Image (cartoon, rainbow, N blue to C red; front, side):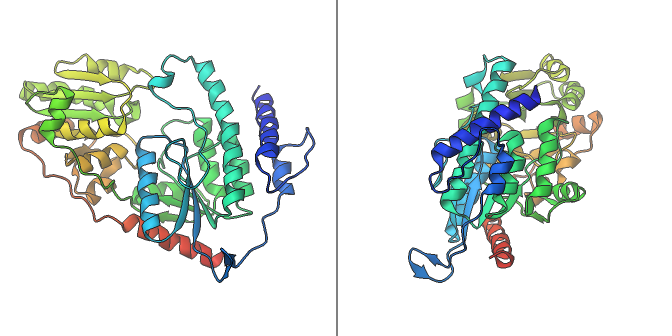
Length: 414
């Protein structure tokens, strides 16, 4: 079944490539596959002229990000803005409303838009989007002729491995790994590990992620901590009023609700919090991709309020601002976009050792061992005596470090 699907994707991809790419036409028989198309294509001869003037051209980068919103989308937009301020000619191939100087990337919008879809319909739509995305990114690379292609996300499912091999014939390929530790052992997770071995360079956010990625033999790993979004956080009282949260101590669990984020640990710790602080409330705000027992157990406890559903970016920031403390008891992981939103909102966090790097970088709060008594004590303490507000590191460091990496890459691959 899987082999038949790949044949269908490849056949569709070849047909669309013939229609869309007028700059480089390759005659391919119906039975030929994508790998044969890649082998037949050749990069253009190098040029030393841009706009008709002799001399080295500006560094040209094609950034690719298939997310239409959320943490990675915010990260990419912030990075692109910083790179442009440094004089980099960067184009962003992304979904509608986010693309800059590059073709818009077809995408399937997640959230309430597909809430009523069954698994088969979602799967079919995902497969269709893979083919359309593959066509778009190939067209973008050919049209823009970048020095560097920087992948922020997976793009075309199993076709990514073929695309990266093709792309490296034309440009250096950089991959930012946002989730260094796989949350599930899926085909997509295994493809991601294989992808890291194919690209020219890998970027990670912190030392913990660098250790994980470097443990798998592959390409050079570069640690570039992310800058925070430039927008200011909302006022706490205004955020509470807008969200219907009254006065009193509030702890918050925020974002996509999944088992690896320590939901079961919070459920074990919360009864002890209520014994010592009967006025304490725990708000659980976010979406649930798949229900699980620990979440049901947590939501049934006294003092817990559920605000379930897909959250837009502005809602995530408002919830972070409304709380006294944000809880991040991740069982594993090396990065949290929710932590970044909490820092922007000026709200301290309680985090597990998995997020110690990011917590320390922003002086974001306190790192708590993964035990229920420790978390009970930490939550009670944070709701009784406010933790210091997080520290926002100076902006611009991420873009400057990325430009330095790009220039080093081009120096050895002119």
